[in-house]
View: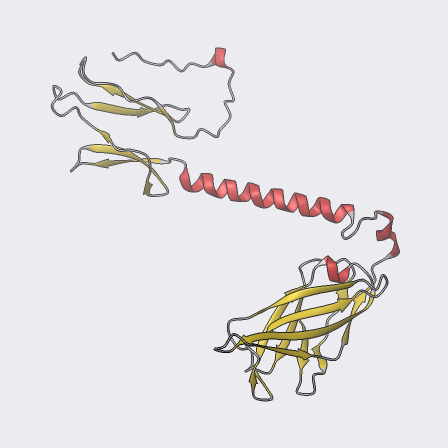
Length: 255
């Protein structure tokens, strides 16, 4: 991690230096360490603004630094993920910090406190010239495609994990409640179904699962007042490998 220390003389000194490559994005971080007390003033409540100039265009940019909750080696810690705003031009990026705090007294009078630092430089190492053939404002087209592919893979993995966690893979019998219920990875899902028709002539639901993972029920005794639950596809995301006309599955009419 590229680390910069701020001392009592308001000088920024690089203590840990790393190679920051041109057009690199969110893989490196700037790490600023500041003493909590400066000339008797608590610096933890100050807003910290990082100002920088790009080396080629001389474009001026700013970033608000976010303070870590805990101290790092007894110092205030500020981290900034390095994005293409900072790395798009090779050369020496000039950086300085500004600390700002506004206080109001009981009468509503404001006191503005501002602390400035001397500038330091961060070297952005140029990449090979052939990478400039595919031009854009930040990343190359190839980089953007790779990022999109990586995002799609992550989304597919997330969906796959969701399906594995939520699709029905078993049936649980509750003998005390006389019900059956689907489960996924040992967790009950859906609504429980009475295993027999208590108060309706004592008819019994008989579950069965065919080779296409379709759960259906039969009733042991015919009853006009007892409805057969709808069939349930235990694996609805599998594609049917057989054509409809060649299927040997027959829906039974139990009414």
